[in-house]
Length: 120
Image (cartoon, rainbow, N blue to C red; front, side, top):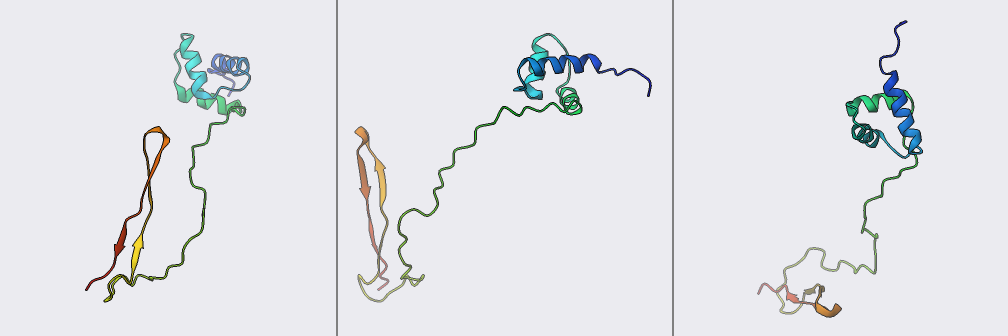
């Protein structure tokens, strides 16, 4: 209990580095900084010492990932087929879907195939 702290030198080095970079460095970057200065220390030890000293990088915010989901866009057609795909009459049930292709010179090409569900 009365022994002196063996990590005191590391604590001062880590604290100085943390304050030098105005609290923007986390344990990974501080470990890299110390390694660049020629010190040999494990990154887990840097992480442990920083948690003991309550040093946390609060000014750095990681960029969020791109999310393309926009929710329900446009008008959704009623489901009139209700999964009754088969019919005995020709051209009674027709279905289609529009596909957009991007061509050269920022031109767009649209394809809309029509399918008959007749099973005569």
